[in-house]
Length: 84
Length: 147
Image (cartoon, rainbow over all chains, first blue to last red; front, side, top):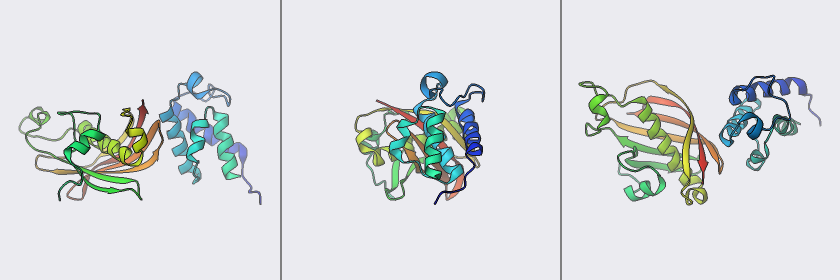
């Protein structure tokens, strides 16, 4: 059964969370910008992003997925897949 | 209650060395709930108390944070022994600590740490420092791990 989720609203919320933790402007934060090279996000910040998103959406991101998170698009994909 | 870990076990888990070890003992290890409780006995022998403050010794908040972070390393060593065995470098990334009560000479500072997320390269722990069951500080510590 598909759930009725507002994809655009969730993407905007995730973008806000990532921008705050990575300390980057929303304009700078494109879905494709790489966390490490373009935005200076280290593994600790990536973990903080995951923890914040898990808390907000009451979800659990599998541990093995966390190292695959390299951009905002990856975060969108994982969260939307879980919220499904 | 006596420590359930020896000084040697504590020194084996921590990369810090004296006089910068702020864990005197381990009170409890609860693997199921990803939690450890360590302690630090605060005595007038601490050299930092001579200047913080003269005639009014109070344990500095940054050192309470350090003690909590060291308890976090012990938790990490318990839960991720395969990573800890490689003797990595643990570095503090961010601390969100609220201090609610002073820690004074004679206090036994309990350092209660629970894992929120632990990965091979980073971790987040919820921390609470207590004296006689009264919270002295609480919050979250974010840390990184490098080999």
